Length: 247
Image (cartoon, rainbow, N blue to C red; front, side):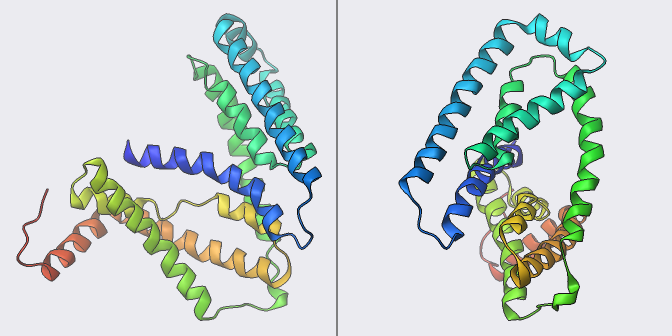
């Protein structure tokens, strides 16, 4: 439950960060019209979300009937693209639009028909997304591997472990379980890939290589998280011999 709550928070915060990031890194000053446009976009999303949730909760049979149609997957893709398009029109992230559509559909009690539609679509487009990401990395510009690169790799893994360790202990997990939660968070960060769309040139290559290397390290840490958690706690206990291990 601790990791689930943490991942939900990440999925809620990352689309908002993707919305704000372009305004922060742009060279031109932010105008009042840009702020007003974003505000109107959030207002439109709020209204659509309110109406969508009302429809889903008050007409569950209609929604269930629509999801069981043969062409329901096409309608679902259209709904996601509609919300993503609204986000792009108002200068927001298209990811935020798709996220709002997901929140709206979360009110469906019987999610089995919804899973039947979304899982094949996810399995189809996810490899295409990563292929597109791989194509965006141009090694002809030169590989930038310096001290900053390794510092970011170490800090990226260490910060996730610290969050899992401290947050897990606050949640009530044992020290070993908190360590395991920290190592299990290492492969998380798929939203980082989307930030490559905001960069270009050498920075794009730097970010791409960082995500690639950190993803490999994260997969290894997740695979051996249970064993690493025990080894880490044994090492910490050796550094604190006078304190008993609190399981």
